[in-house]
Image (tube, rainbow, N blue to C red):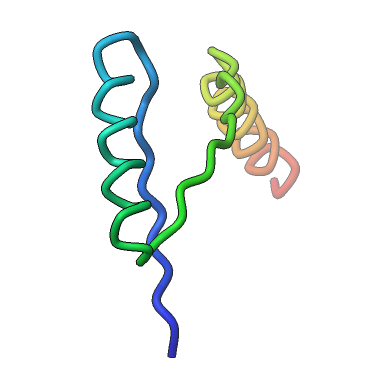
Amino acid sequence: MTDFWLISVPLDKTSLTSVEKLKRNLAKTNLASCCRFSIPELKVGILDSLLSVSDDLSKLDTLTER
């Protein structure tokens, strides 16, 4: 069985040197690979709107059952 670990490191000016050190250490040991992938910014307010719609649906559901 193969184990996979995903480690996420945020990139900013202070952590960039840490990421480079991690890449060098991984390259020396040859035990893992390091790839960069982008995660899109989350839209603010989507969860709030989903929760309000869910509340509205539950209210409408009780009204239709009567």
